[in-house]
Length: 220
Image 1 (cartoon, rainbow, N blue to C red):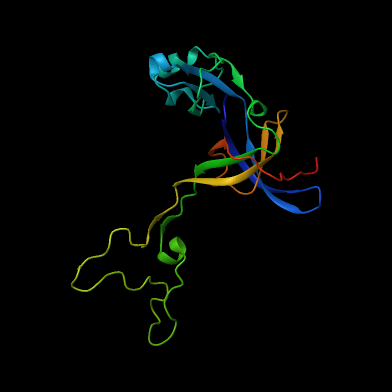
Image 2 (image 1 turned 30 degrees about the vertical axis):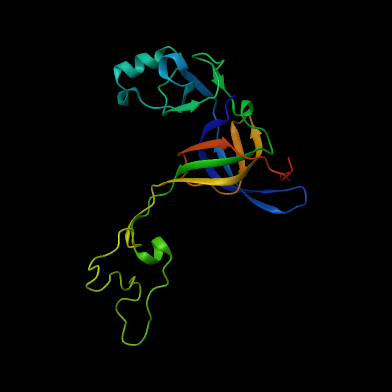
């Protein structure tokens, strides 16, 4: 049984539950996944399904990879090729398609993983939430400084792992305790309660998690 689906982030929007409360939701484009390879326990050491989604130019693919994808009869080379592991032998075959409704239904609890937005080089206040130094008592030229970072002669160095300015973002982030509000197969859109990491058109990995005791019911 498959418990993971890949989609691309569309936008953050709003919805209303059956009591009229406003909810922040995230919409994701969930086009059907095309199976490009089925791995077996005997040959590969584990069971999994290799899937493809999206479109990309042929120029960025090597000939061996295009030949590998030819078996699945894809009209266009995919933008993403991902693998979904299974606990038992898959019943799907190369060329089959997996819809979002085959994996999820409204009310399912999920966790979503994606790549956070890149913020470039950031200071301590933006990166870690430091409050900064005083704006008075003679300090007027470095109010956003992180302050003292080292010790005295012992140990005479900065401790490894110290929170300091540096590159921010582009990390893999997983958000848990989310809920599927709607699965629209006609428009290939999944609506998720809450916000998820990543930027628009980027890849999201949506995985089933624990059940929601009191699932939110939204207006159609």
